[in-house]
Image 1 (cartoon, rainbow, N blue to C red):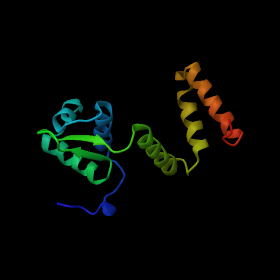
Image 2 (tube, helix red, strand yellow):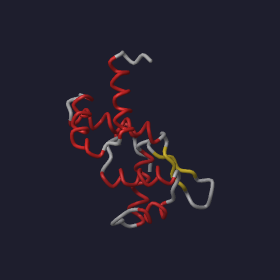
Image 3 (tube, rainbow, N blue to C red):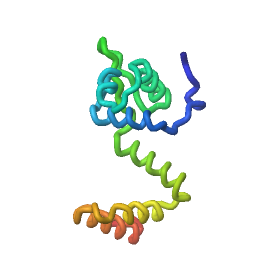
Image 4 (tube, rainbow, N blue to C red):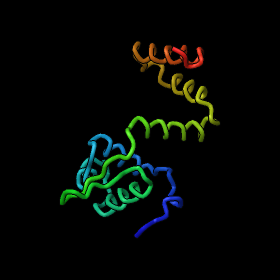
Length: 133
């Protein structure tokens, strides 16, 4: 059954996010491997269906070269993460990256390491200089 990719929502349900996390963690994963890694896992057929939907959304590709079919991410984890982050910023922070970062830092300041703080300071300096460096 072919589904028009234009009509398939790119937003991920919480379970789809979990499944994508498993596939990224493993690099490639079969339905059984995903099922094994999920907490409070649904049925095998539900996982297979969700993997198929993620394939239709263009987030996974299926490798049929072996008897067991494996699913692989289409985009690198960092690229997919940036896209998801942009979506959160647009949805919850009125498209303001500054507001999102400030909220995150305020919430997790006690947990930041010195290295993470230094990376943030460097990124802020690059932003102030217009990305030059």
